[in-house]
Image 1 (tube, rainbow, N blue to C red):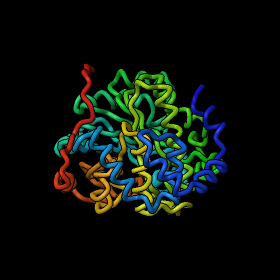
Image 2: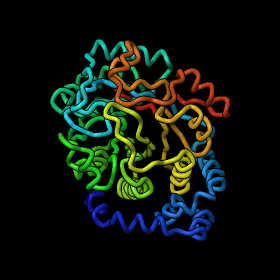
Image 3: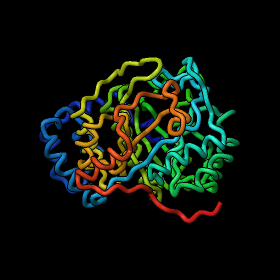
Image 4: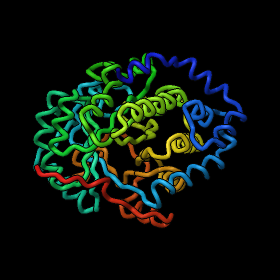
Length: 370
């Protein structure tokens, strides 16, 4: 059994119609309940819930403070390589885009780590393009121990791997993996993944199952908002989360909300999500699940991030560079996508403190000897 079995029983069109048929009475019922289910989530992300945004925000903020206090976890992505063997329509690293390619060696990684440590981070997300041969397990075996020796918490966002490979990376210090399905609509997925291993929809969909079975501490999931109708895609994210928490209850989970950003290739979103709708989605996830971590990246503007952070967000990136060598060297022509919040780490931290929050620079500390 895996989430693929659950996914096969969920009909996209039926779910979409169910969401759009929700009424004000359904929303009010969901807001009164002390514990919500997936039907309530449909109501909370529906058009019928938009007039209730203020009430949703108040409840979401209260639940977040009760569980997470006045803290905001900071993390930073470290891009190790922009080599990619996939052709994806929405990504600047796509193999069909004519950009300079670079993979950091150990000495370059150490320079990046030094620059990141100088910004106080102790929670780092390693990112690569998906290139199994040149940026695969052999590369990770060399890179992870060097990086883990300098950071308390190590996450990755790379190509999906087998369960045994995740288990091995855990012995090298890996704590968390972010793996986004991009879209849960199979035919839309096929439209945007044209070449390479990422064409395998089901293998990617099974990745969180393999991660949990390998004993990875935290798993991040989400949809790339804009590839298909956002409400339906995000319901599938919620269903995926519910399945994972029920099946692998010892694992922690996080949800991210990436909206399509400008990149080399210039794909236009199929489904436009406004800022108020993103607030609605964040609050709906918090009302559904008071325990899950909700993350917001520098894809979003400084103004938006400052105003939404009290409502349900528990972690955010700051000072992000989306290209290999971005912190020590800075080569913007290599970036995966254009960021929106371009403030320095210090300025983001100050803004967070002005909202009454304490910045937490590490996710968790594990005893580790490598």
